[in-house]
Image 1 (cartoon, rainbow, N blue to C red):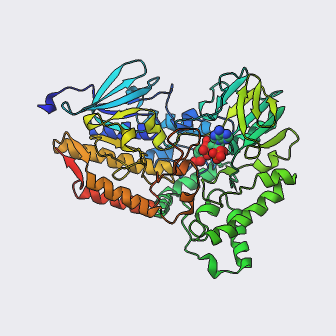
Image 2 (cartoon, rainbow, N blue to C red):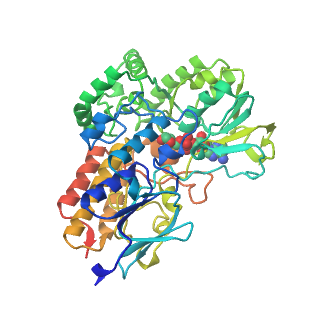
Image 3 (cartoon, rainbow, N blue to C red):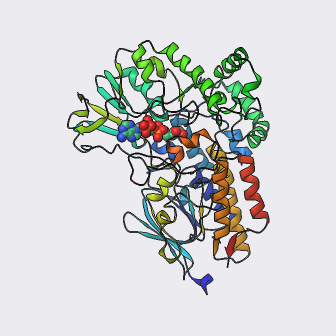
Length: 536
Ligand code: NA7
């Protein structure tokens, strides 16, 4: 019988980031065998790859982490309110030590394909060296922003200097002293990196296509006494996080912008602006993400903030986004970003006016200028969300490819499973609640582990989302996104990447309801013995 067919492992996990590490732990608790296959040389995922200067959390460290173990919470110390990449990478290594995960993590293993074998009811994965791995269950922990992309211009291989994508940053230190540096991109990554690079580079030219709205991060060190207080506060923090829409401490406001005078609004915005982190975006008036008139008002407020800080009027004007309102794309957090443009060694180039034409042997060329550089940094982002899946040849029942299945946009059941892909679960796949990603991962992986436990207990060897479940969920996710201004703008959040064929059109890639509603729905499905799953 099917049950007697051997597999290498009970469970295979792709990716050793936060998802993969926690999945490994949960599978250990089930007493099943597991292997986590990771392309990098060690753990960390996003926090392994993105080691560019200035890389750090935009979310409070103590909320952007796991909460499942009191011991881990008690023993880990954060030293900054918004942890730098190095500290987060250490945190993930600490998890692996404490949870004894290392023996089941396999590095330098890039998975190229994952094929379902219907008659054997198992997954077979193949890595870039042709090695294969089989398991009855597959969990993907391949990330949301993990498949980096470069500009689609000619000459990328011609450049003789050093070139780096920010998410493929070398482990050895990159020094900028005496160097002419170019950075392409103006997203969250570039906005963190630019002020850091500007400190030492001989010159830094920023090549910006679309400007982004930002907010001040206002990072600070955490003293040991403060960390003690934070630790005592974990239970109430968790309670608060579990209530909010995005899984952060900052809840949505119930205030209507139209109930207040311009002076009162100004006062409210000044208060929010003075707070560290996300509140100005997440706790603003309830209409700002759905009503263009309300959005125009807040956009005007942030415009003034930029003008106050950038000395050169031409540069200030270029740093003000023209084609989208505040908050309709992911809002990067900044530290001395605008001040960097006041330094004599920093120059902004507007690629909307003079587009990038090609990379050359000694620099790059726009439509009007050829420039020489020693280092080119690509802060050009990712084939986001579905892009991580596109990088692996997933084949389900009847050899069905996942790329084809999602040709017109992702179709999932609960963002956790896909029809025609039995026994496969996604942590942070499309149509999941994002926001506070570690909190979402903790929930998703928990749900997945419980599903596998249920199947094992009931001798279910085939577990597949059905057509109706997928249709209803996909419709529901689309409905939730209907009125949001963010869905009318090109960004990674709407699945657009102009460098990639097939990613030119906006899609609904994320669940945009409230995180507590998402969890409630998934809990209900599980409680109803996995409604809309085919179980054999
Ligand atoms: P993003 O936010 O996707 O930003 C990528 C940036 O690169 C963005 O400014 C792009 O401009 C720019 N880009 C991409 N391709 C080109 C070309 N060909 N020419 C010029 N400029 C280009 O990625 P990040 O890494 O900054 O941040 C990712 C997320 O990580 C972030 O939102 C946080 O959630 C954490 P465009 O906007 O397309 O005009």
